Amino acid sequence: MELVDIARPEPAAGQVLLKVAAAGVNYADTRMRAGSYVRQPALPVTPGFEVSGTVEVVGPGAAACAMDPSILAAGTPVIAGDATGGYAQFAVVPADLLFPLPPGKRLEDAAALPVNYLVAWLALHHKGGLRPGETVLVHAAGGGVGSAITQLARLAGARVVATASSVEKLTVARTAGADVTVNYTETDFVSQIRDILGEQQPIDLVLDSVGGPTLVHSLKLLSPWGRLVGFGQASDTPASLDVYASAIPNHLDLRFFARGTLCGSRHPRDRALLYEAMQQVVALWASGDIDPVTVHRLPLSQASQAHRRLGDRSAIGKILLDPEA
Image (spheres, rainbow, N blue to C red):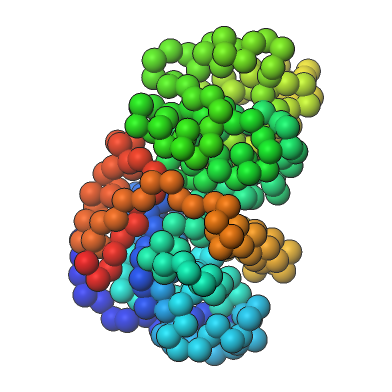
């Protein structure tokens, strides 16, 4: 990646141009850079699905699309539920996924919500069907999405078991509310969790963004009628699975979704789901019930460094880019 001057984008029908205050960095951005994202555009491309900013230009028909047209006034601070080209000073966003900045909240902090907490909410509540009192296993709990899932699960009354690869990441998971933390690099996480919980306290719901062997081994921990929600493959390793032997005898439920595919859909059901999920997230942030645990801020010129941190798994918590730094 390189930092260059390009023409300011213009909002198409139903879109709004924002002056970006901050942009979130996500694993999906690294997949887009590599050319293997689920909604892969032609390269070269400006990555960035997650921004907060102020309204600059309103595209044709945007007012009719917006759930709250009053927030489209120039200069209004907003949170974008989805974005295009967020690693920039200006980015276009769909008007139907814009939300006003809650009173008392900083615009520069809001960019940590739209991907991490949206995915967390969908994984836990829409796909996972989380119920109070259940035991949840969260993989990669020291990252942006993992710590968001941990917060939301604990808020919903779940017991949270979290895995991560370092002491620092496990500290983030505990701060987010994890009851049990496991370093999967030290020994087999399945054995560790069984030793801690006991054979009679299995997992009700697994949230997995790692995929590959992690997904396969997680099934060994699920209780009968347990659920696994997969929403990523950070391991870059496909899961090799005998579904009958691994899932069917114990009535296990395997569920998957892709944020990118959902955000790219124009189906009214999908748009309503995205809006409802983001509305819940913004409300919880406004009330102080959730807040990103660890945030690292870098100037936009250091976006490559941010991607390297994600690639070598040294990133802890959430990374935000400042386009004006």
